Length: 182
Image (tube, rainbow, N blue to C red; front, side, top):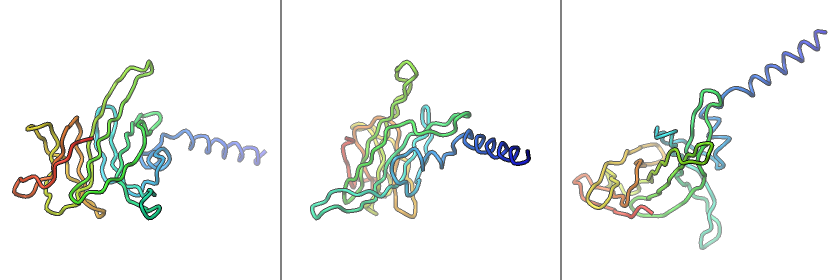
């Protein structure tokens, strides 16, 4: 009788643990299909949270495969019942540039009928040139500052919105690098 009661208690504990909402960390480690080395930024946006993270990947190079550290974005949503879940598409890209990289991404959220609820366009990247002290994103002559993120792994930037251009500025406000957002 005691063995049966103990077994039922163990099964109930396992069941209850499995029903607990996923934490942010669990969602990043189990739902993002890449090896997330480090989360470098979280930004609340319409319908969820954009997460910038570093991942180490292999890519084809002229001399064979090489490992690269790429910066990527995920779109997570939180609910009280289920906790955190990965609600965006997943991929990574790796670009080389002497000044800064530019990665545009757009996340879409649909309702149960397939209607678009939220469109979340973003741009982000790594700042490689030490002369760049600010980053702006915009269209032609209308720019807004991007958020700068400094970590042990480097300097990064993030901006939410639809932008045609991204530029890195010197301390004097002069463009060190300007790139199309594509």
